[in-house]
Length: 304
Length: 279
Ligand SMILES: Nc1ncnc2c1ncn2[C@@H]1O[C@H](COP(=O)(O)OP(=O)(O)OP(=O)(O)O)[C@@H](O)[C@H]1O
Ligand SMILES: [Mg+2]
Image (cartoon, rainbow over all chains, first blue to last red; front, side, top):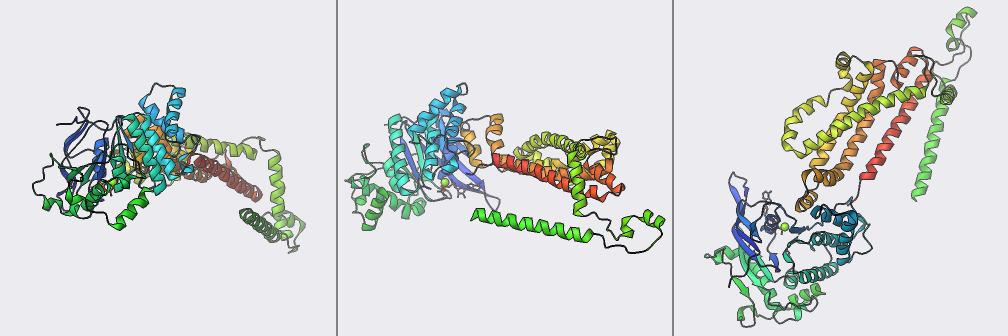
């Protein structure tokens, strides 16, 4: 079966001039595809090129080779169809909450009058739970509230795809949890296609349908695609109670801890166009090892 | 705590001021008759010689004269005798005009330099050479080409205030946070709209800082320029009163130059605060 490819990253490479005149490839010949309405998370060690992939997908950066096809069309530069939620929220400090969201709204619908823009922006401010803070400036908001504005701004232009670069990494666990719930709810309700970078394994397991595992750079490859075995109606707080939770978690953690370093040597015949899809189930004895106590604890702490 | 610090600072300021006035008063007071001379000669020499009075006016003389000026700031008794208000008005008008022209040139040009690395590199040698030239060095050239002393002074103000604004604008525009630019890019905001809605507000504090430096320099330079071109203005007034040997008037002019300079700086400082937003 060939699932519909809503996003198709085809053979992209990114190279930078090296120190000694040559070129250093962050990655070469990278293929990745996602279906409409899917939530994809990328996990990999620092410096492997996750942000680079996301920026290329956003159109903020250009690949040295290859192309990105979205909805049947090769992308050229940025687009209002692909909204970005920045790690550092990137709010304009001279605009209020409403002003920041309205800026995005007027950019998409240039002929709308003030009242219409305001009403539209307000809808999304309400959606992320910031009702009452419309007239505050970013400096008067907490980190979580700023990130909510970033989410409202991205959603307000009703994009086809949401791109998120570690959107919650700067937040405390509690705020992160609420925002994860928020994002999951919105994505499920609107059937949003989303692509997110994270370092938090539990975040990926909670949010993603597919988890993309990248090896270490330079010369990083997409090693595996892990299909999330947890049911759609999973809850954030009882994630760890699911029978497959530790299997999938251990698989990802194992990859990050050991296999991401040695992957290229271990799997010499790796075909970047046909990345193995890992389906985790109880029938696979290798991955259903009982969780270690430390991990149980940390997983629960994060989940709370 | 804060208020009390302010209060204490104010008390110290006032004490210093009074001490300064006191020392000034004592230093310039007469020492009594110093030499005997024929009445005709004494009349010729004035109080300086007969009563040991210092040629430097005391604070009371200056105060009295200042009060006189403040009562009639706008009188006009011909070219060499105008009220201080009129003279200051001329200077402020020249500074305002030259400064305004500099703003019109420096901010768009600074934008261009900040946004285009090519233009930045291409213009850099010119700016590097032109910037350190004393604005007064342009005066003869300006007088020769413009053939009008008033306009030449305005030109000198223009040339001295253009550099800090130009460099600060270019720097502020080039240093706009990449993320903000990326926000505009992902929203498909066009170049012009991006310049006005992202780059300008982001660079505004830096630009205003440049404008503040410029107004300070312009006010420094106008006095010297008016001493050279003559005719009107507070700089001419200072020079004219020096020729009249009226040190009292010179001191009053110095005081007013300081006050006006401070006010101009405060206005710009206030504008800077208005466009500065913490993140
Ligand atoms: N302008 C550049 N010149 C040279 N090398 C660069 C440049 N920008 C990025 N790189 C390199 O590209 C690689 C990938 O960077 P990228 O920001 O995509 O990593 P990342 O996976 O997002 O890391 P992190 O998890 O720390 O955010 C890094 O090794 C970095 O050194
Ligand atoms: Mg990154």
